[in-house]
Image (cartoon, rainbow over all chains, first blue to last red; front, side, top):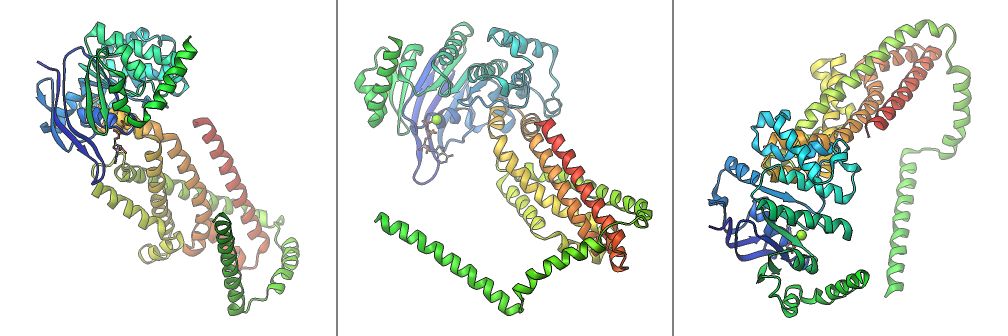
Length: 263
Length: 261
Ligand SMILES: Nc1ncnc2c1ncn2[C@@H]1O[C@H](COP(=O)(O)OP(=O)(O)O)[C@@H](O)[C@H]1O
Ligand SMILES: [Mg+2]
């Protein structure tokens, strides 16, 4: 059975903005999916409709066998603990330390009182430390998180998502604010997480080359609709052109430039 | 077309200037204010100040009494601002679009804050004089109401500005509302809120002096007393004490700001 199913999912912000229309996707456990498309295509909206950070207007979302759009608040909170989220701008609480930010990932499992008091078990703290070690942040643990570089912040974001013990990660342009070096490190970690832990990863990307390199499956979004859904090997130049529309030429120039640097 | 654009812009500036000049001139005509006499009396005022408005050894006898009133006024200002900040925090969390429980509630919270903020302290004092008479309570509540209105507004802006991202991240982990407020909203906005609170305390001390004249309490009353009994020397000592207190407080709050940021 599929881990996540979207059926006729639509989102309309107002009369003029139809951000998503009739999206149908079925995602299996352990898949690494890249969602590509020009800015304004609806990628962020799609990701946020999955965990109801944005309420879809129409359609169905089934996650782990549960109809997500018709659950009560408490049940929604429980389901969200199983879905980690990673953001372009990291979304850490800047004034808190790295380890505090990581432990935030456990708050979803706690009652309001225990969560509010910030009581974490010994096991949770050990897990946080272990995750930070795994992500190469052992020395940064007690630093304030606004003292870190972008790439380090994003790794804290990954640790916060992983400590949730998730079945799926939703990543909204996780490397859009990072330099090529840091980008590669982050993408490598996401790939490793998907392969070694069997966690499903859905990642919005602006860069086609990165998407082609890392994903098992590409979903191309253009003007709120899915225009491509298949493997990265099958996708043609023409299809990429169709996804990106008039942005295509800029994209090619950028890609060539990168190749030029690499060579 | 471009020439036209700049011409129009200059014309508008000219019209605004002409309007200001005519309003000023009209005001002078109506109130029969003599501009030349107004300015020429400044040197006289200064020389009067220098010859009369300074403390003498006699006036220092009143110093203990002055200091007690000043201390009272400072405590009143700190107390009203601090209590107001607690209420303001509560209203700001409900009033901010980032953290509100529902939009209708948010509008009501913001409306209440706007109401309290836009009524001036002096007006609040006059209103409260009816209920509490000439007592310290009148001043306390007047300061409390205005601080509450102002701080709610400032706190809402702080929350909207700094905690959006953290709130989204914590909401996505499934954290409860209270956990989100305590672990994301408060840590990210606390230092800026404290800075606003210090600003409010400074403002309150200034206002408290004036309110004291109205309500017959605190340092304002003491000043009024000596001034009306033509003891200008002691009155000047009161002013000096106030100025020193305000400067000291500002220095202290600047220090705190530096430490917390
Ligand atoms: N909160 C919002 N209110 C109104 N329109 C929005 C809102 N968020 C996004 N949109 C619109 O929805 C469309 C899709 O946006 P988004 O999902 O952010 O695209 P992407 O992530 O692919 O750049 C855009 O046209 C955008 O302007
Ligand atoms: Mg986006």
